[in-house]
Length: 394
Image (cartoon, rainbow, N blue to C red):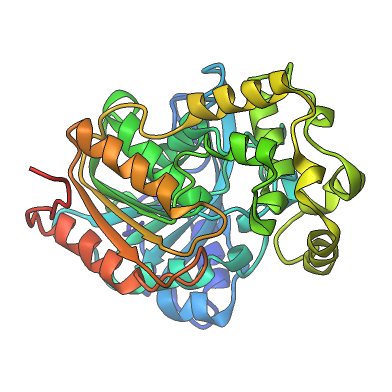
């Protein structure tokens, strides 16, 4: 994200001053052209406009803006419009331009109003974004298709997520002319899947950019083993909460899916509370989780169980060899995305010839991994062109 350009209009200077109260125009980076472009992926269709953040944003950044940019559906390759945010570090751009980190955020819900860019705290991702900006990276964070924009959010559809993350990096370069084409992607949980998928699709889809690596923390890489656990009644409470959103995402790819084949009892009756935005319905979610049983998410027939396993397998990562090194971290006590699932996905990535540094914290669950500083150092090493560590055998 970020530097000055002679075409910067007085109106944009006023916008940036509004974003950072008390900061004069001379300290601002130049922000790129208004909406327009050629209609290519990553082109802005709206913005940049000020992001209404906290004082922490103004202290850490020289500009923070919201954008809407062009992207592509991974379901049918149709053009889409996706919203997101771009944050610019303080100070002048380094030689070669600001390096970019495109962030895939964790799950925030599947409704349109669950777009992080609509909230001052980015629905929990602000601390991550600020920490990355303070380390000298332009940070772009997509909302993902269907969040903050019309349409249904294709939750955990990896190709769409990959395209949205890649195009967020392109959009950042339009916002900040001094941004480099060199970029890395970072994500946790749903975002970990998006980051991993972006690495796999960058060679095909990411022309004009130079991806140096991806960070995936507790990624939703492969959920195919969830189907037999649903059928056997061995799912965890954390997984039960995930099922309604997972089915909605699968339904965007497989419209023949009938949620009634999988949702029963209290989950069927109150599924809307489980599809809402993170934080807004926490009390309702807790009540539902306390009342739910594995029977409430059991496939109604063997055919439904088989369909679900097939559909989840089709969405599983890896799908192809990654285009750059990967950093993968997960917890040994993760009750949402079981460690055995992630370990198996990592093993398949190694078999494809990927370079993967795998970090396992045996006592960590899904939300208490302590790997951020280490992963940021890994990102810095990629921009410094250090050799990437590899945990794969041989």
